[in-house]
Length: 210
Image (tube, rainbow, N blue to C red; front, side):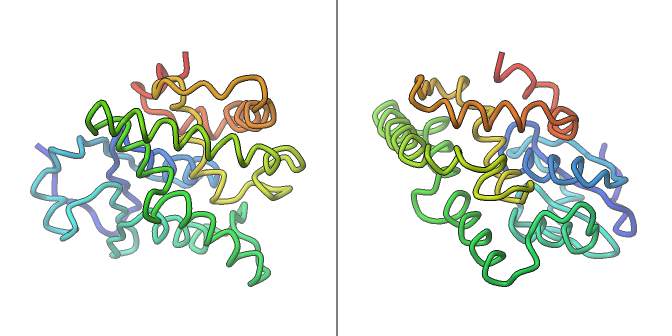
């Protein structure tokens, strides 16, 4: 039985399969945050966690007496609370651009995260349609992966932390971008080779890209 959450410690309640949880684990590993990660199933969240998160979602972060949920909120909080290495630029224009990309990829209607969810849980027809859309969207943005080490940046940002879990799952999603997407493959391999990314993988996730 799960003990009552200790709100004074840094504890992440996360799914071992969902991309949002993976992204937060990646951010915490990149920042080398001392933390406890409690792995849960998204459809079996225990009462102790439901009591502190009325939205009944994962990931849920407890820190300094605060309870946070929503990927963007958690990510920005962690970046300000643990400022090294910074994962958002200081310049307000550049920061706004990164926030918009995060919204576009993870929360907007028909965003990439939503398409992945449809591929995994939707009907065969809807999954096939979502797979085609996601494949097309990725290929269209191939040039943006070509010119800088990270996505539109010389340094890793939260945008990369959100993209990495998706790219890691492409084989599991039965998506093959082909040779024309070499810049995406090169980008993904740079991310996957980071020790923090390897550390962020749950046991089941390690098999996704074999």
